[in-house]
Image (cartoon, rainbow over all chains, first blue to last red):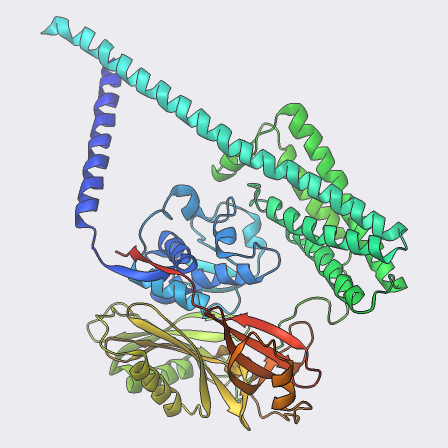
Length: 152
Length: 449
């Protein structure tokens, strides 16, 4: 019984923190806006969700992998198709995708759409520390930028 | 007070229980919704592959060009649907490269025969029949395996959501591994066939990059070249080091460059052969825009001229609030060389070039033998759709999409219904080779943080 009580307290505490942080988040949100098309926006949200902590070049690299997939025949032909392929990207599953992107992510997305590709043609990337699928390691690694490994 | 504790705890427990039960219900509800999407994709995939299989079989027995045409059109549609449905199943943990390639091969080959048939209305040639027979054999293997998976999915009520969630938890195993094993078997069986070879002209290709000029350089030389470049372009460099190297299409050293009192580096990619500056990415906060696009274009041209790029034509401008993206192509004897494009981004706060990419230029630029166009500009003008309001006609070299060659074309820029188009018309045959719509995508305001 005592344990349950602790659990309730814990749950209430977590709830309060979540609500409060949501309110604080809403308050502190900057009002800056940029003009953006749907594909730039979706790619930027994806880059932001997947590679927020990475240097700008690493963010362009993640965007470039998505663009390389769009152009490659074995993957869907649109940015949305590639981004929302089930299981393709962690950010879509864990909800990191659903946030407003940073200006850097927007810039990186636009670069990737315009054809910038620092990886030289990568189709896959993964974080060696957290990668879940084993077959990913069978890809040929072509570079590592920041904490992501890039492969074809 | 003490007597109150127990009833209070009971009430709290009931509330938690109610809360948990609600969550459980909601969770079940969402799981079933996701599952139904996956089931739909899966069963549709089985249906698509079965249809592909029977349409391929039809092309093998019929001799009627109309029937062949009908089957090929169906094949094209069903292969696209199959790829899409395959992408809708949560089996990212299984490698399906060759299976996907098989679907693409069928689509490409159908499209190729359709195009050819459209031109001369012939029956299938011996070689085409053989190819379709080969595709059919492979496709049937996929279909048979899919049928087996489907039977078990239906009989044992296998869940794709379960496959998806278990794959994400390390060390957790599925009770019934039919789905993963089934798809792995498909891939292995397709892999066992040798890769199908197609003649040039059937599948889209990317032109091979030419070897770079110059000698192999060391990491130290790369750092020195990068340091020198950035000293001139972005002011004094405090520290530079190789942060990564790539073995991609053009192998490079990625050099991180730090300025005094700044801990976010900018990056230069220096080619391992020849030490060319391939790409530049300057990372900094960009302030309010002060320049317009014309001023920015001047800055871009100044940068390119400084680094030895000349005779450039601006072919595309893209921009957001504070960065302008320019694409330039060089010209030779007045002909635009589209394969050799250069990309430059200018920050609109102070006009600094903040990104640069010459991958295409280094890969393809050379002095070419450009033939004289066989058709004159007047002859081309006469062929253009009269509804198009022409803005300019000029000569342009473009890569062929299906063959390893470049095409001399007339680039016609024109407007219809407020939409701008570029038509590329073969300067030899007068065929419209490619149509590009230039109209800017619809934009809206989004909040950034």
